[in-house]
Each structure stands twice: as structure tokens, then as C-alpha cells.
Amino acid sequence: MRMLPLVLLFGCGPMSIGTDGTDTAGGNDTGGGNDTDTSGGEDTEVSPDAPVIESVENVMCQPNTDSEPSWFIQATVTDPQGQDTFSKTGSYAQVILDGIAGTEHYGVCNKGALTISWEDPSATEACEITGTIRIYAVDEDDNRSAPWNYDWPAK
Image (cartoon, helix red, strand yellow):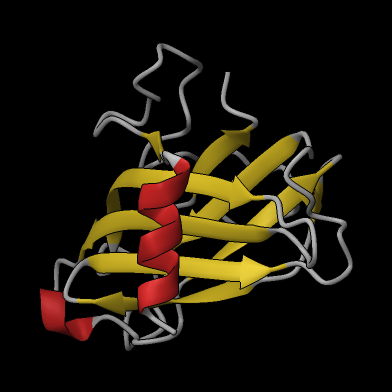
């Protein structure tokens, strides 16, 4: 199962995001690691012990003709308390549509490599949405990073 997202990521030509929070196609700033945007009702107070999202390398959606769309996100994160302190399954992404935060889609973080993937059975998060994908990294002490906001579709 873990190999499937990697195969799809290479086969679909993922969007490449620069380390400064901008997409490499010259589009809009995607938020960076210290974005304090509060749309979606999120509290943005961040502990000095919280992880930091350094870069988002891939954000993509694979439309599937026989099933729901599949979303994939890959990011690099650091933690001031050490790379071995990440919560294995506490990091997540949310899609923000019209200022309303959707379901938290949880991912896996292993020594700074964050991977989040999900399928949307309700199709409310189809690949054609226009909104923001908000990404958080969480450590084992439940310290949550500042949000990294990625505008979808990338411009």
C-alpha cells in the first residue's frame, strides 16, 4: 500500500514546490512555513517547540474514473526538539472551501518526511475544487506547526 502513492506520484507528474513556499511554475506564494492566515477559524498561536514545515515538495490530485479522487502531499519538516519527536500519525491536511475547514486528513511523518494521502468518497474534494489546502505537522507532545497554506489549483 505504501508503494502505491509513490508510483502514482511519479506517474502523474507532481507539482513541484520550491523551498520558499512558491510553486516552481512562477505562481502565487503558497504560504510558507509561518503563515498566520486565519481563514477556516484556525488558532495560529505556535509554540517555540512546534515543528516547522520547511518545504512542500508535492501536492497533487489524481482523478479516478472508477473511484473517488486521490490526493497526495509530500513535505519536509523539522522539529526543534529533534527529528525523532514527530507524532507518527498526528500530522494532517485540511481542504478549506469558502472559508470553511473540511475533514482532517491524517498522514505519516518519519524523521522529517511527511506524507499525507486520502481518497474523497463524497467527492466534495474533487480535483477541480478551488480552495486552500492547509498542512500541519504535529510532534509527540501535540505541538502543532504554523499552517502551510497551498492554494489549489496552483496558479
